[in-house]
Amino acid sequence: MRYITFALGKGRLAEKALEMLESIGITCEEMKDKNSRKLIFVNEELKLKFFLAKAPDVPTYVEYGAADIGIVGKDTILEENRKNYEVLDLGFGKCRMCVCGPASAKELLQHHEMIRVATKYPGIAKDYFYNKKHQTVDIIKLNGSIELAPIVGLSEVIVDIVETGSTLRENGLEVLEEICPLSARMIVNQVSMKMEAERINQIIKDLREKL
Ligand code: PRP
Image 1: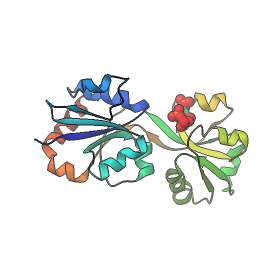
Image 2 (image 1 turned 180 degrees about the vertical axis):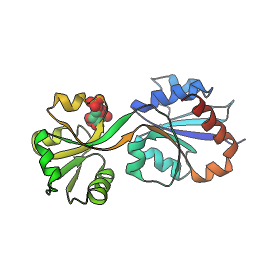
Image 3 (image 1 turned 30 degrees about the vertical axis):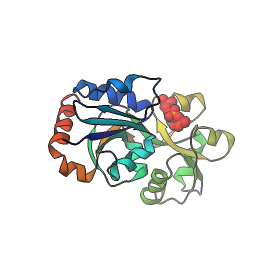
């Protein structure tokens, strides 16, 4: 039997993902050692391997078959736009992709003004403004703390994830438009889905029963 490899996105979702896998008997004791610098973990008994990667790299590992299965946020899946099967909404990590800014920016959006949009998700922002809203905007890619952009005058609005909304509130910003709901998803390599159909379908079935 060959190994089935899981790629998990580092960060907020990883812990929940591991908990969920544990609930269906997929465990990896090795991975719980927080001090370990090891990158890949093995469960010999179940013939499974696990690794943690930067979230945007997870769909890449899965598309190339370096991982059979990935667990990652829908935001990353949309942004990376890789050829994988998205097989399951895992129901955790729920949040929304939104256009946010000061209340005063609402008008700029309604009048389709040429504005600057700062975001960690240029692909999602482009798709939303160009293809859905037919509004030409200047998209500025940032790598974090996106809420800063409208505060310091880098952009009029941002496209970012909103979970509780507290980052926005504490910085005098608000949701201006909602782009789409997000949550953690399971993705599968297209070849693995055929070659390892039995084992992978069993995992999907077991997880679905826990939702
Ligand atoms: C995310 C997102 C928002 C915040 C939203 O940032 O970009 O800033 O969380 O959460 P809230 O609605 O509950 O306040 P993250 O903490 O992942 O870091 P980043 O700013 O470096 O992207």
